[in-house]
Length: 310
Image (cartoon, rainbow, N blue to C red; front, side, top):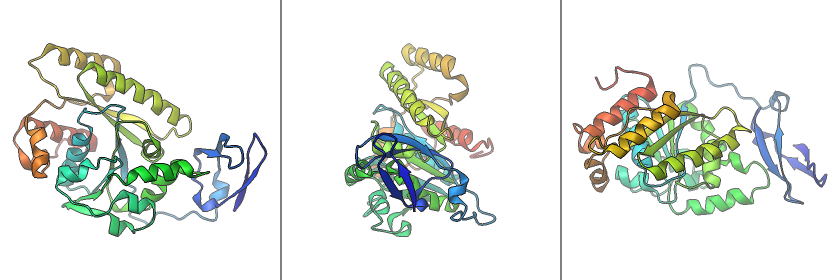
């Protein structure tokens, strides 16, 4: 145990050092006066509790699919990106942090448990994680995550690290951990950003989505003050229709503002809303359609491997 002193009321708090994230700024909350204050611990705190990663094992790339706006194909992108990486031979864990739990529906999975049970330690990872496809595993979301948000809020210390504490031990088992977030800004979204290192933002080519993008980037910058490891990597334009001038104008504006982050757009395709009714990914439902081709290109971009699907 170590002692932390609140800078406002000088109250002393004893904290389990095993729950302290290494070399990261975190926000603590005083039990006595509710004052929030940043702290950062050095390697010395962890010298006796470090566990070396087994030789030959490499931590998974952690990618959040996020934006402060609904209806932009966020879940469609998370599911199909995960499925595409799995088809390419990578081991992928898809984590659904949304109370709607739509990732399960899109994959045709009736999960009996998921992320809630993992975070509350009711089940082990082996019991909570469902194998959805070859090389693709799912930690399902759902309504029960509403209770997890309250649980995080009630924590006096380290609430923002709840998700990281649960997922970090799993990293050596996968090549990618893809996290689908809710469209709003809530404690679980904050948890995601205190865990992942890469952000992928789907943006439908309409004005309101641009507003959602701007708002999300503002929120992300507030997280980066305490955790500079997390960064924007990809912006994925969605619902692109060449027959209409307005989406093309928005796409050009996005390229002008965020050039290096912009991926090839996902074209509008009638197969996208139909595939979930059959519990299938776009690769399974209509492998030859333009949408399938576009998500293959996104997989190649994320994996930095142009040979995939060739």
